[in-house]
Amino acid sequence: MKRTLVAMIKHDWPFAVLAALALALVLTNLGADYLWADEGDTAVFAQNVLKFGVPKSWDGRAFVDYEGRRTNDRLIMVGHPWAQYYIAAGSLAIFGRNAFAVRLPFALAGWMSILLVYGFVRRITAARSAAFCAAALMTLSIPFLLYCRQARYYGVSMLLTVAMFWIFFKMKSLRQCLALAFCAIVLFHCMPFGIPPYVALGLTAFLYRPWAEQRRWFLISIPIVAVFTLPWLALARTGYSHDVDPLPSIAVFFGRCLQYVVECASVTPVIGIAILFLFCLARAKRGRDARHEYMSIFRGDEFAFLLATVLTLLCYAGAIAFTKSGYGLWLVGIRYTAGDLPLVAIAAALLIEKAAGDRPVLWLSLLLIFVFTKFAQLTPWPFTKIANFGGNEIVEAHVPFTTSA
Image (cartoon, rainbow, N blue to C red; front, side, top):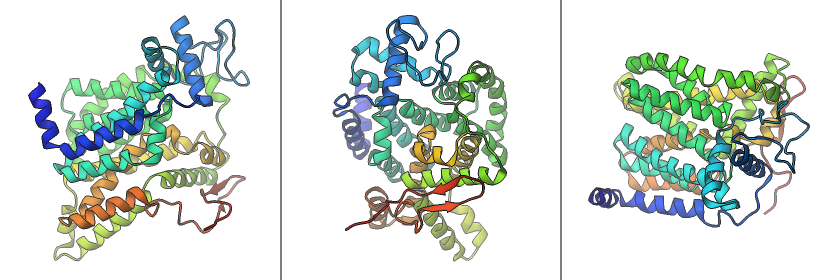
């Protein structure tokens, strides 16, 4: 076992160095700062889990809630699923009551998502450069590091999202089907908005013909996932009903979807991905057989991944637009849908690899542009701060009120 691990590190030493750097970035001074409001929420409910077995708002001395919206008649939390509280409770039981302990499991989950991303990209592309690029885009992403270092479900959501993709792409047995269902269930109980990747994978299976095998196993997984998720919605309906912004019209729905796109493009390289994709298509059309060249741009699993990622973003946008106002989306960004981050990083890595081809200088240049500049994001490009989109809601980009040298 030891020899195997040493051989793997020697074979993939650039990634081993990157993984060590990522671990340092995620864990250094993890407990130095005070917990902010939502982290404090996680810590308090986790502590009450250790006392009562369930996340209660009242521990005999303090009551944790706002406007009485999140607890039932027994003072038990019903405004948010419980997975993150039990994860944090386990860490508190081992390491004691401190900021480091409550953040540690989520930070490690975020770090493990980098490892899983590298392995997943190697699996679908057989290209170490693409896998390294995807891992580097995550490791050097400030939003990713901020999400990882918080005592919230974000890191676990990213890990489980990548795990679902890993399982689904080669799902050919009941054991793998059950593993997919398990990931989807836990992801839901971290944050219900985390379920769209599962839905998107199912849609991809029906749209992508070679995935007939996955389609069959996905259908088997649906009732399993439903049994372990729908009862929570019934239990928590009172908690969620106070936290929903009603959808007044179809126009506002599309405005909210656009606001979600703005949020994604503000912290992930969506703009750069779109440009590289168009570049790859334009280069393909210059070939003798345009259709053949188009089909040869991506391998089967690569095309399936890009399709599943686009569908995931659309499912995220649709789900969140039904419940959150445009202003609410502007405030929370993509933290409800943190699974975006690894998927977009992988998509960017695949397209950087295709655009650069066998030119390492171009590959490195594109990677550095994506990592160290905002040119691949929406932030530098808006010319207006606010755009009206029907109804009383607005679509607003994240631009500074003033600019200075």
